[in-house]
Length: 165
Image 1 (tube, rainbow, N blue to C red):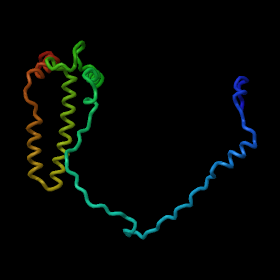
Image 2 (image 1 turned 90 degrees about the horizontal axis):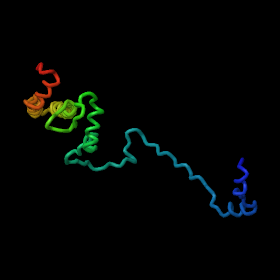
Image 3 (image 1 turned 60 degrees about the vertical axis):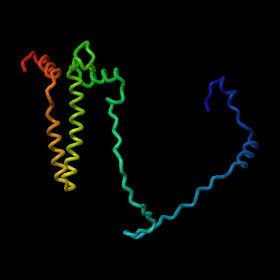
Image 4 (image 1 turned 30 degrees about the horizontal axis):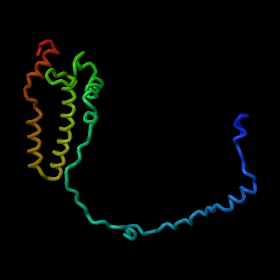
């Protein structure tokens, strides 16, 4: 061991007769015997524990998104980072009295994500044979899909397009 001159005094090795006494007092390590592997015939149920069937009822917990986990200031920064160029300079992207494209795009992304989940549900209903339920859900989705008129959104769209729409 190479130590600097000022550290050599700190390294103290016990005398050999003390080391022998210490080692004799310590328990010895004996590895456990190997466990023989159980060999069962294919298709045999020997050694398998069958549990009773369980049906879970209840609502699925909602998954938290990045949007739900941040503060209002964090949401504003998230919109500026996620949709660069769509936040009006000098304005707060979270204000509702003057909506902006970044907030609208965030709402549309969440809306599309929810529609994908509903489309999966429609396909599941159709696959399980509930054609009436899948048809009703599909019709409701079509009614919700078309966005209603909102003067703020319309004015925002026209102002960004120089009143050409």
